[in-house]
Length: 155
Length: 147
Image 1 (cartoon, rainbow over the protein chains, first blue to last red):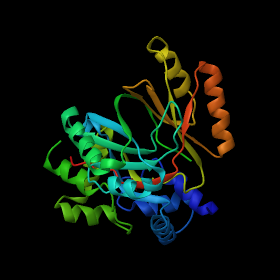
Image 2 (cartoon, rainbow over the protein chains, first blue to last red):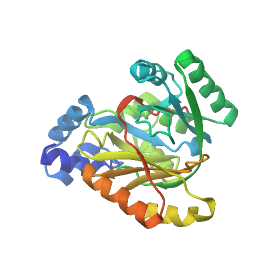
Image 3 (cartoon, rainbow over the protein chains, first blue to last red):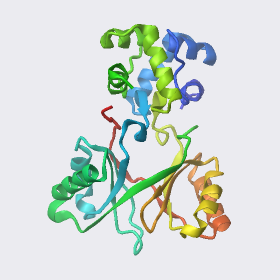
């Protein structure tokens, strides 16, 4: 990452200024031109360093009170194919492969599921279970009870 | 929250334009005044309906080291352990979950060596082991909730 990229990340990671020309404002703070800020942000969006630009809602404030981390044990040689299929479900917000930690933790696939009630979330988890079918060896669902800290990732 | 707030949240979870007057562009699509759009976003942030507004960075691609951590903490000791874990600036978020592993947090640091150092410090401070589950692959990340 170039020093200018890094300055732009630092100037925007807490959020964009809510002004008529937010990128010009960032450019002023960083000490470069507005067009340079726009083209560097476009480049970071294109190569995935920026996932997206916009609003990050609070689940709970939108009524999504049943937030579950569903965890699944599937064969390693099928995890990529199955992970992509699970990730494609419209109600799955995050889907990752992670290492097992045997004997405590046999799960290698994680999918975050959000619902307005536990019934709704349980139905979504059930849809993942059906999708995994015979590849599934074990699974578990960990509902979040409360947020203990949320500062977001900062550089 | 009214129908305009819902429309703002649904429209703005991605694709905020990269142009000189992005609020004007979005306001036109939503049939709102540009200033009203910004005021509503400001209010949604103040009320905590939105946690932030701007670019969402993939910190791992920016060159950091991250790991998801889980701990199994006795209920009687939970508050003490939560305070110790939360006090670490490297802990980005921390959730209590209903499970034997009842505390789940994400560590963000500049290098793998530093995350290891923080994990070891948390283990010795709290007296409980930390299970590290770094992401090996990512199949989907796109939080889009209908308001």
